[in-house]
Amino acid sequence: MSETRTSSGSPLMNEAVSPKPSVSDETKETILARARERGAAQNLMCAGAITPEEAWALAEAGEAVIVDVRTLEEYKFVGRVANSTHVPWMCGLSMIRNPSFINEIEKTLPKDKTIILLCRSGQRSVGAAEAMTRAGYTAAYNLDEGFEGTLDENRQRGSTNGWRYRGLPWMQD
Image (cartoon, rainbow, N blue to C red; front, side, top):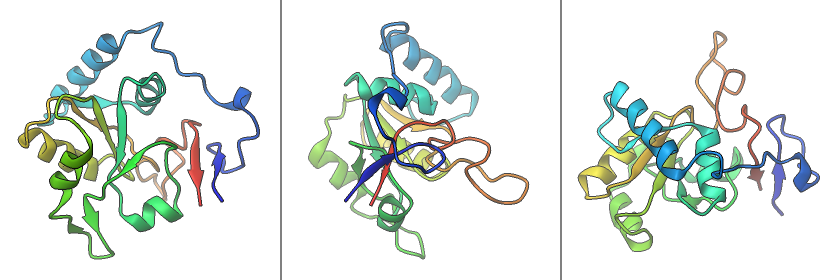
């Protein structure tokens, strides 16, 4: 059984607790223009870098698809974004690059779809977004901060940034 959780890990009890994304205040084009600027500033070789809140707003509005590129173990046991698609960029404990990654993506997503790639901290998803761009995808964005966020001074995740830290909805088996 899956349940949606808040950033603190407690179950999300009702829709009123969930952040309400809105693309009405900002158009998809405005959000993606800002993401392109961020990506250029970071020297990314993909469409851009998007924040967790922007990704949630676009996905909930049906304007983008979130693809989780973490390993199956991370996806299943750490938690995941509801309604995300899972295609691992790296596999297993030795983190070997998935040789079928692009083929798996091509089976389900058109090359002109707005796609936001998510990993643990926003690092592996850069490689996945750049590989998709080289394969002809025109709107592959990296999700800055990832699902768990970057390491803090104690070398732990989840206390400074990331999807869960931002209080966005997530699920866990």
